[in-house]
Length: 270
Image (cartoon, rainbow, N blue to C red):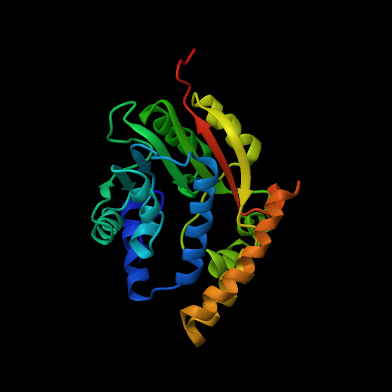
């Protein structure tokens, strides 16, 4: 029996990783999500080096490439944390230049002001409640240096698929099709912005990403991957990328699966 994801999160994610290693799945889909998050970083952040970087979970780096290749290219110092020691170890073995640490984002083992950039892509939407999200944001603000930047994405509760996933009636079916692990509370655009401001950060940019119909894309790309190999699945997801044009419309906070924000720690906090 798998551990309780809230009472024993490290053991739970250790078990998720073991399951994934025994039966790899959604490989093309995960690369697609990595690509979207990489493009988000390149749009939000300056063209030069990004300084010392903290990434707030390492599951992507353990089971696929994740964002580590891009982050290591833009910095000589990239630290990644994960609540699961097994996930941290697997990510560190796959990316030797990455400093992988087993740690809880709500209680980081780093001194204040030691990172120039924090990347938190769909990490904070796995907790049971909003109090844990607030604790994590306060810790991320603490370890940022003055002038440092946080790029954060979270599940968008206004997206119909996320709304259905969180509903008591259809949630289990949607989670089985699209997200084969525990998900938790999340914050919409306005509530996330308020939470960032309460942590002492200033929001500079906001958007939404991943506008293709996720449940359909995951299911079809998975079938293609099983039947015909990786290349047809990647080709299908390349077609799905056309949905990202919806980011330009005023409806992006409904069609986007993730809310995304760039926040900055004031250089001279008042």
